[in-house]
Image (cartoon, rainbow, N blue to C red; front, side):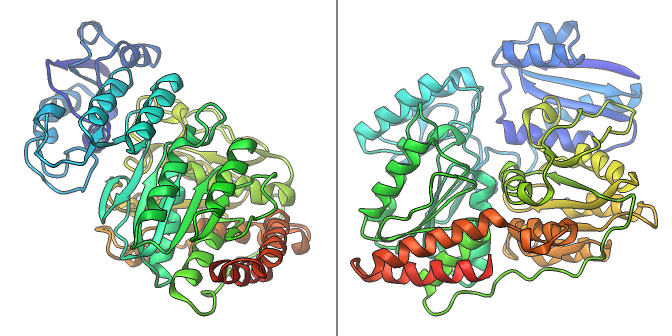
Length: 542
């Protein structure tokens, strides 16, 4: 094995393009690790701590592309020789529409006349300055970059509010503005539902489910995960609510987030109630959000958020509830859950829903060591493999399945595993055929391997195809369900000692939402009455 670095002077590429190319270059035999980063001090430090930095890489500057490859000598040389061609290939532009749009704009000053939105994907230390430039030029900003200090985020969003503009991010992974996808997003039909969320994969799940339920989407506005923190105060979520309230194409609004700071959640719900449009709020696991103000439905899960919004947008009865698969019950010594997610929101939802059922759940596991199988804990495991500790020198698992495949093989071979859960996210930014790599690992599983419960996030209009990806997983032996929520419920039914305990948080939250919405309906506008009916049906199925 050899380790080599190469530095390409003044060659910039955004992080999604770099992750895609790294995943492609790591595919051939003989290549163990590939990392492509801009040569910022922080990135050089990460490579050094990971044992991937050599003398040429130490001289890289912030505007230089730094490539690190470890493997067999010939394979390493071949990978290094392909970098520039791979970056100039189709589909490697900025994380926008996914189409080849020609040479990228190198300066905001050189943006086309009339441009109204800037997509910023520079290294974190430079992202805020570029976003401020966009605001001064009258453009909304979609900031894909992470590692932006929270103090700069607050200043950016206050400036945007002063100018009547939106700052989506920093660390914003998903948006769909007037049908144009930004970052990781799905092809969904146009319609009456607008979404605002601090969760990228949560937005993808709800918008894709709306599509499958016959509803459509007007806009999807990402905020960045820190937006609902006490420090930021929900500035973009509140601005997004106002933008959708003013949009004549939007009739129903959905909020999606992990638990906001309590005071922020209260302010957002109060603000939503005053908009005059029906709002569905899904603050996953928020213990303080138990009373819905007039016009607002509290949805306990991602599935129920989509279901309630679809009913309000399309009219009539709620779409069908979740259909659980018939999975064989585990037998001793199999007793542990192994949930291996690419989407962090799905891991959060599962841990919240399954905690009261399974008890002791761990959210951490040792990162894999090259050449060795991952070690799995002797506890129920709900793992977010898109977390920073697993993506330090590798692309995100939505792009490169290597690390998750290693964990999947370990889980299938572990005699303690009673069930394995997998998510597959398709659409813009995701791998070309993500189900195939997982299916390969399933095909190699022992005959007595535990059952695998999987779900696919996306639509048949995505290039990977929802139906095709589901078929690949089914053909490999997985039990395929319709959503992240259903997968968690299926695990509860499979592993709970008493089915009556399953999803206690969802049921109690649904009951509270139903009661509060019903109480307000008599004194509210017709939208509130529709919300009340929707919430009461949630309680029947959760």
